[in-house]
Image: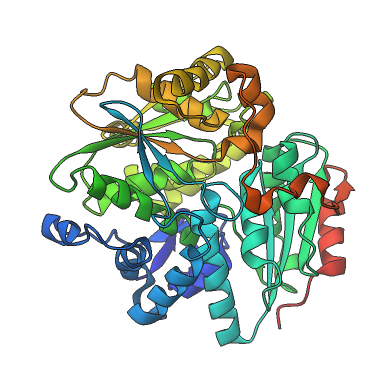
Length: 466
């Protein structure tokens, strides 16, 4: 399997190369040259497989010759053996039509664990082969940072530098990063928003002074391997609800577009998905883009769902590239215009291609709170604010009521206990396995929201490439 950049000029890489590179050298995002596809019969044969086996089966075409089937299965079993639920991503029924897919049973209580526990295994495997070091530089709006740090803390050959917007994530999210005491873990709180942090990360991948000294890698969903691992749970849910003989719809609370793009890939691979519902909060750039073609940024509004407080959704570029004819030069020009003007219009081909599978919805704060209450009062479920935004979209959609609707439950409610308590009167508690989190000692560095300050910090602490 070969991986190409959305912007057309970076060299094609194999799976190992794309995993370690993260962002392409031309600023684009890697994705497969072509989508592998399963037949209906092949998908049906996957029903009942344990999650690790299902993951290995679905991901093998993307991995190609970089890992044998036995090697990939071993890595999957190691990654998903740390989850607290035997099903890894269990389905919970809310009513006759609505379902939750619980993605928060990993070590940091968020859906990012599903991908990042595997990505940590892949990094260690590939780096040992090469005898080299990797400097991971990432930005987080909340959950990516803790999941990535947990996945690579103490691993050989890896240093991780995680940027988060100072004061703009929940206490639990911050502490899950800043209380991890390992010599290869470095937490950085910057003045500014998540988008500011993400922009610094992307700039570093194109900084020759940095890339000549360090192997810069990514754990954000700009890394294809992370997104690949998220494809699996769409298959897992659909197989339990009658797939591939029955279509399923998914409502996905979305910020950076990686989680819902994984659903798009699942559909390209042959999974019968009726519709993907992109659920946003008031930071609604994706809703505006999908509903009327307007992909233009505004100011970021801080909300009770901080992982969605984003105005630049990096993975949207992958969809635009795929729907727009896979023209790298045209994509590069379109993104250059967006980066200069912070606004662009989707082409007709991009809008029509997206409309085949995607619809979208925006939730106001009162909509989120109403969904939190609905889940408790009608189904006895306490959910988190991000999941509530997805549930609001699911409950108000006009998709055929005969089609099961699965909302992705992206985080444990205790990660956002204040917001949940305000809406429902119930304060969710952290699971006992991390119950002492709030008493652990923190360690992080506060830096100005300036690229040079962050670059100097990393240069002083990272290990050279080899």
